[in-house]
Image (cartoon, rainbow, N blue to C red; front, side, top):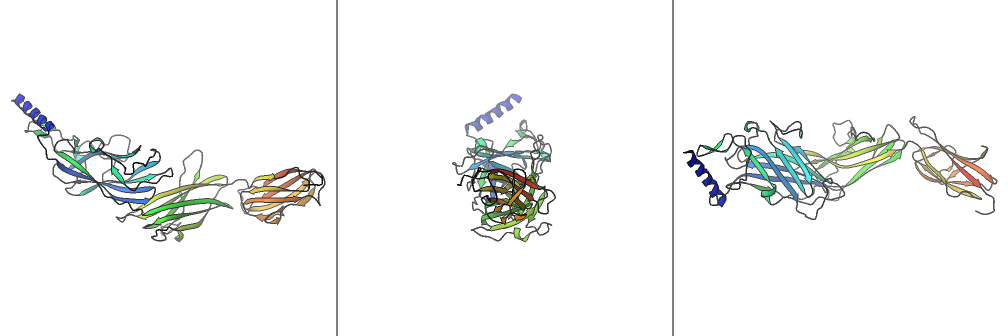
Length: 440
């Protein structure tokens, strides 16, 4: 009796392999990429759904889906492209990547050369798997895909082919599946491939929506002086942009930058609300947001800023997308350079002076024993007698024809801080040699 059953079982398998049995495939699920939104040239957000369309299964087990780009000329390194999970209808493991999940799901999106892989690993038991309602969509995940390296994302993804090589999706049964009620074909809690090579399969679909809804242009930050940074940004296309947020962090050689401080935001309930950060409305020519100012606490460090845009998606939800990061040095010393353009000289010479901050500057000349000779003159502010000077580069003239004879001289620059106890008086000395030969 048992021998006959085994022979019948192998006979069924043989016929199935020959293609004479189960010739009509039954699609039991639809996997769909939809709600594709290009938030900028460098970022796209998309949803991945599963729909059960038959009663052949109920519990979703696991899957591996792989996408690429329609533009096959788009080449990138894996480090250029990042993909991240934003949300999911699946109950997720609180510690992703630590181990295989037992009661929850683990979703791992990864980037490989010329393909994006989304792996979903489900619980071990049927009871812990999510049950997919018939003819209803379940959101497997919303994913954010962004590109760096001065590249622009192509305007469409596609499923990687051939499907039977790269795509997989499985379900679980509530009880053992038997052939003629005797031989187990699948045990309960097995992961059963939805494309079994015989009569079952799943289909892949993609809803195209390639229109860019936001195109970012540039973000700039520079030090204006007196511990104040100036920042601004511009856009090329804006649609459904609610506003912007800027955060600040301090860059060190030991720790990664933590962007804790909000400098300004469009959100009215925030203490750092600034109406200038609110989006200026839909436009195909972009907008300019400039200038905004930030006063920092300490000198001698590098401050970094990140810019976010809050964009309203088609489904009404709001997503904060990272646009750019910029860093700027806040100087510790005030005088960073003092250099004569001609030395030795016979009648006059010019000194190139670099001030890294606003300050009061005194510039004068002494002889080699320290006796005062004369004040210096700047090309912008005139006589340098404790004169207010903004950060920048200046050319300081010393005309020795009426005040000095041949010999060695010291030009002395003293910079006094403006209401800043964190900076000391800065001093620079340039030694000059005057040679009276009757010509320049």
